[in-house]
Image 1 (cartoon, helix red, strand yellow):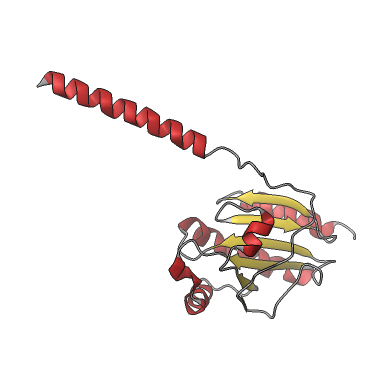
Image 2: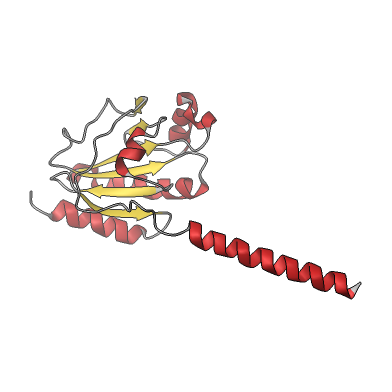
Amino acid sequence: MFSRIKTLTTVVAIAAVAGLGALVVNSAAPAAAVENNRAAPEFTGIAQWLNSSPLTMQQLRGKVVLVDFWTYTCVNCVNTLPHVEKLYQKYKDQGLVVVGVHTPEYAFERETNKVKAAIAEYGLHYPVAQDNQYATWNAYGNQYWPAVYLIDKQGHIVFSHFGEGDYDQIDAAVRAQLARAG
């Protein structure tokens, strides 16, 4: 009996270590890491624009732009949405444009009516681009939900953040870009 428990414990321990090793390997930085100070890609392959007519990075030149990749079933994304909306409300009159890029994780998240319902539920007032085919996601080389990219007035990515938290740091980055001449 004790021999079986000891063997089972050993097998479980080995499996746990192997699983942890796989987790560490899979959590490594992406091969094509996002680079700051490169030109922000154009919005491309957008199925639908919600809360706005279609926007382009070219027409947003001269403004500070915060691009937020999210999807409505991602708990981490949902947790960041109030902070993104707060940034929009706080700085929209100072030249900040927020663009949410809704990129679905699951097929059912491609339905525009469900995205509209999520926008209403979470009280989002900024433009949302529905990126069902991952075209804008791929143009940015993005790999995360949620992900924020801050673009300066010249159209360059100057800051990026992945996941929840660091809201004060994001706010400070926005403030710094708005304060810059240009």
